Image (cartoon, rainbow over all chains, first blue to last red; front, side, top):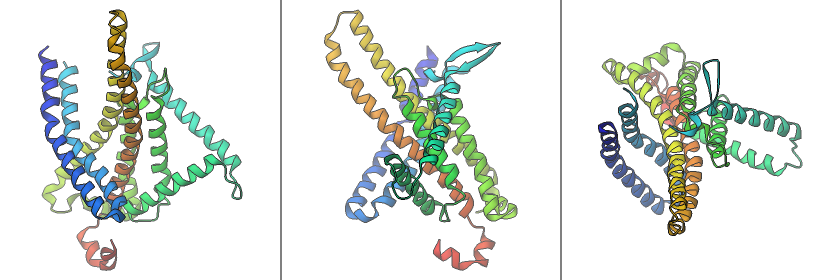
Length: 72
Length: 247
C-alpha cells in the first residue's frame, strides 16, 4: 500500500515542473509562430525536440515510480 | 503491465509475449507491402499509395537534411524504417483485439538500442574514430563521465517516452471501459451517457499521440545521429573555418 502511495506521489510531484515548463515552452513557441509564420516549420520541429527533452524529467519520475512499484 | 507484454502462450518455459507476435506481424506486413509496391512502381502513373509514400520520403529527406546538415543518403534508410515501424506499431493499437507492440517496454527498449548503437557507427563513419571519441571530452575532459552518462540516460528516456505514452493511452481506455462494464453491471446506465463520449475522445487523443510519438522518436533519433556526425572538435574547427561558418 505504501508503495502505491509513494509511486503516486512521485508521479504527482514529479510532473508539476515539467508540465509548467512544457506549457511555457508551448506558449512561447505559439507566440513566435504568430509573429513569424514563415519560421513555423523550424519552430515546431525545435519545439518537439525541446518538449521531449523537458519531458525527460517526468519520464525519470515514471521510471522511479515503476521501480518503487515493481522492484521488491 | 500493458496488455502487449502479457504472454500469449508458453513453449517449454519460454513465454511468447503478444508483442513478439505483433512486431513480427508488422515487419512481415511492411516487407510484403514494400515488395508489392516495388513491383508496381511507375514514373508515369504513380498510384495513390505511391504518391503518399513519396511525400513521406521527401518529408523525411528534408528533415534529415535540416537536422543532420548532410546529404540524407546514408541516414534515411534507418530513419524511415524507424518512423514507419513505430507509426504502424502505434496505430496497431487502434485495431480492435490487437494492442500496440510499442506499449511493451521490451520493444521500445530494442528500438532505442538500435538508435544507441547506430549513433557511434554514423559518427565514426563521418568523422573517423579519433575525432569521434574526442567529442566525448569536448568542452573539458572532466565532463567525460557526464557525456557518457547522458548517452545512456537519453537512450533510456527515448525508450520510456514511447512506451509510457502508448501504454498510458491504452491504460486510460482500459480504465474507462472498466467503468462502462461496472455501470452495465450495476444498472447505473446513466453513466454510459457520460462515459461513451469519453472513450471516443480518448481514442482520438491516443490516435494523435501515436502519430506525434512516432514523429518525436524519429526526430530525436535524427538529432542524436546529427550531433554525433556534426559535433566538431576544436582542432577540426581551427582547420576548417569555412564549414563552421556555414554550419
